[in-house]
Image (cartoon, rainbow, N blue to C red; front, side, top):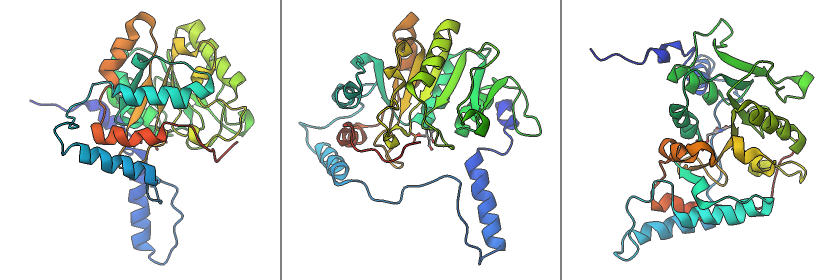
Length: 299
Ligand SMILES: Cc1ncc(COP(=O)(O)O)c(C=O)c1O
């Protein structure tokens, strides 16, 4: 008999955002006059930039010619895109990456889940609270946790409170953990981390042989020149951190990128776990977004 993965039954209310959507729909149906301020999943409201539209169109036209046609691309993404990102997005930060250290994938949300396949279930995972719920739920789904308590906290996950008292920055866990999720600028608090703050985490990870998943989804919003955009700006981070990005990316044509490190053959494993890039036309449209530009928000 085919059985489902029972771990999914542990999920409290499904994925948080569909649950918010369901409640908003119910409330709106019962209160049609009410104006609802939606704090659930966001969506984009502005059209794509002309440079991106142009790159998209050009890439689709490429598919109509024998000379420029492209089918399945390389599993890790096209070198021309990876190299442009390294050159235009990382070099200005003083970060040097090799082509084979970066992957173009189909989104950082998918990467958050896919990457768990290559880590043993008995790794102890530490997650900020509150934080992007995907980190928590994907660990539940893969079977790393026990049941949730009445507040929705799962057994076997180390939650790191982020509150007014600690400036919404998690403190180093008291117990030894193996995998640490960090997200700066943070969803949902918007908090950013200074270089000194990130150095604490990098030192902890290297001292404890832990891995940091650094989600830099919102780094393009950083405007303060003192605030790092990438964890690789911190000495020692390349040994312990895997960074996920969605810079210049938009829902509807999503792609992500991940950066791994060289240690212990981990790079090879990462390629297997993360490499699911989009087709030529989507990767083409990322090119105009590779360069660093203006920033909008700071802490
Ligand atoms: C912190 C964070 N990381 C990752 C994602 C997902 O990014 P992507 O669209 O690349 O899957 C989101 C989306 O809301 C997010 O808030």
